[in-house]
Length: 332
Image 1: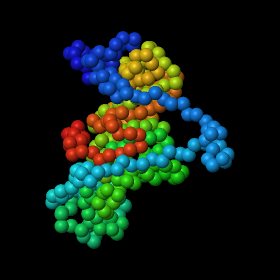
Image 2: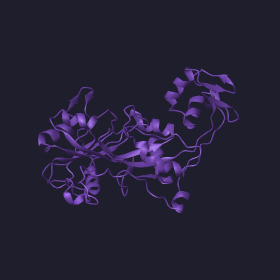
Image 3: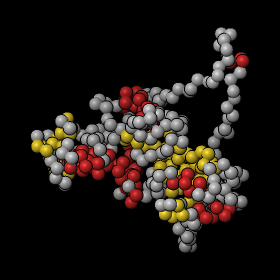
Image 4: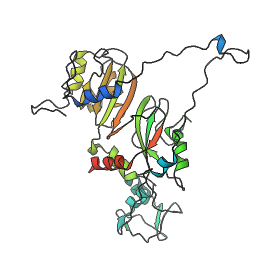
């Protein structure tokens, strides 16, 4: 990411604490752009006597804010990008299952081994088995057909689990997409989130039924770039800033590699912009915890070329055709 030709240590930022961020630092420029219009936090006030309704008792707490999906105009609905898979002869069975929205290719291989897939009435357990367009494929007794591919971007709010269902009956991100299913043609596609954001992390989250794309985006070899806005419980000291930038932090699962790190707000060093490509679980939180800091807020502002620009928290939108093409271009 360095703009000059001089060699620099891997992961080291060109930002110098206390000085102005130069334009040649891409992350710092991006961070400034993302956070420049950030509204100040509002203190939550307690209910008062005047909040009482019809002369009754004052409220003990305010009612929870309802989350809602954006209303899509007829023109926007007609322009929603949907990709229709084309099946050529001699396609691998696991790829067909992935295109049909059953599971990722890796999981599809497991389902085939378990004998849950039939081709033309016969159970197939052979790895690498190929099917043709005219073949009749069944999964657990149900005939499969290739699904239309949908791609949605969600600005994930706090307190939602990034999963399809939760055993503890907590709210999941899929609850925020009810309005999307209304706009998609039946039968309803099996959408799922790409990667994970933990319960307290907010920001950019891709939702799709394109198993092949999801697998590529989450595979370590793809090294997909992600940018996060981090708010710590105290100022990040210069020595710790340099230690992170130079790859000097070692966690239980190896060296903590960071692509770039910067202070988006020079007046507040408890705010940090950080770019990574790893997909390790709770990586950023563990990184700062190892140095004695607590992450109070963590917001993903960039993922594989996608940002949450003009997308309020808790809202979703369909990706445009150009955005989908760019996503796939990054993986080629």
